[in-house]
Figure 1 (cartoon, helix red, strand yellow):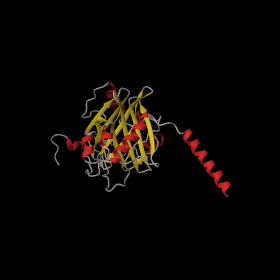
Figure 2: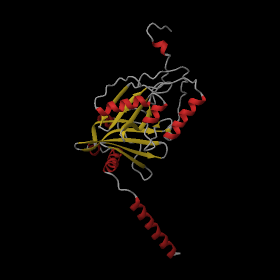
Figure 3: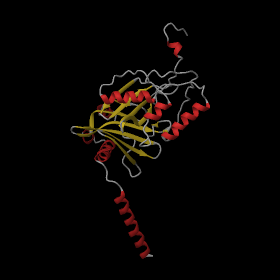
Figure 4: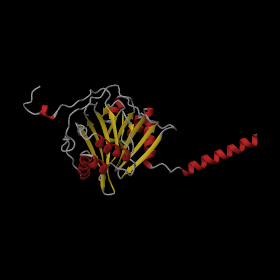
Length: 297
């Protein structure tokens, strides 16, 4: 019995050693992400500040937006996902912009967006997302809602070449199923994550679902993409981080955190987080004719 136990222990140790040998070493950004997550969880402001970008912002699971690190510290915001053994870490690199996702099960996700600065890698933005059931009934839209914002115009003026390319790509993406299929990245099997849906199906499945819905109900109302009320962008040349406030049609508004990147010469959406604003009202549109000057109720 003792020999059997000793043999099992030796085999177990050997297997653990083999697993460690197979595991790829952590990148510099992932190591920094773990360090800052530990600092933020423990409330070590001095340690965290050394790794936070000057433009740092944070969206919590309730959709509260903290525009500065000072605001986040003042409110005592803590990370939704820590550094425990059950936490999964995903890293996608886009040149000077790196996306690190920390997730715990299928309900808790934390998107960390890192920027390469002259003095090293800095955490630029966090979007914490907790998957929850809706506590309200969305409003069903029964008329066409054209996509003017964002398809044609936004309350935002791009500056850098990357921003301009990303904006053009996003407007094509939101213009219809063909644009969506072209401009949503599939090299990482990109999955948008949102408060009321969690991880969506793969791009292939989503695209097939779009085409199937169009075929089954060709006369259904055509609803444009969620417009943008406010947005900020950071241009890193071949990649762009966007943080936007988007009202929705018949739903609550959400904060979106997206990465657009030049993937093999084609600008595509490569990351997307939608955190709904818990205490916001449901926002239902009105027919376009009702908004024209001279229209009466």
